[in-house]
Image (spheres, rainbow, N blue to C red):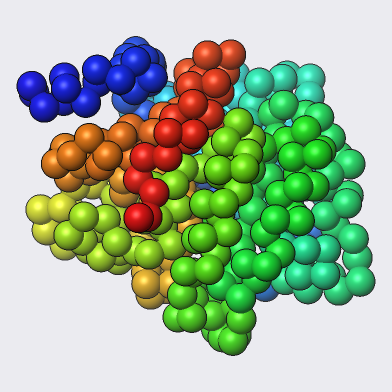
Length: 359
């Protein structure tokens, strides 16, 4: 551990490491709160994989039983996904009374503040106004402006910006609007689950997107929930000597027998994780897939986990360790697992130092 001590001589990293350790381990689940949504976005894994076909009879008894079961199991963090969670504000409040959580929303229905004052939420945007409307199946509608209006200056809300390979030229203008709206940004990468190809196709690669995101991190280090290292790993599918895929994914339902072989392949795995369906009982393979090819998955949350669980692969150099720690810390900050007043300036300072950036 003498090597680790040497890496922590930098005061910013030392304090980040201390805060993460003090916050403790995350024991997470992913939860579909409803099968309903007010949009049908092109490229949404939820409907592409027919996850809405689960037997969905969301009575309060089943929901309350799920909460008690997960509390007894030691769950302390819930990622709430779709359908559209804003359609169920009462259940959001009930969850928030028991767990730390993060909510993914399309931004068109304002999530109330009362009872959810410190609940982080990722507001989806898919590009420029034209791109955003097209990919959400609503050409001609200004959905982005509606989301900006709903969450202007709302410190709970960050924009979860999904960038397609051929849309790197849109990044700067979209980020400028988000920052000007008083919000922060976490980037995601378009997976093209509908197989449209062309400028949307992931096989085209994310090299230009990666460069634009790096530029935004450098320009707005205090408004970013992403890091150079997370950007590099997610967009390239490379972590040390490994290539992204099902064999290395760490967020897989531990109780689902479809994952039995993966559980035993020797690769690190989150030992607590489940992706719960909207019946509040059954699980699926992972939070973003049922049977899809994992090479099409560029989901930021999955790659956060891949990096975080593989600390040992990042002890070879000070820069590798700093990339891991800064990304780990970004996860804790965006999800309010560490105090925002101290965490946000530390993350900005680390982003200015630029660990893990592609040379």
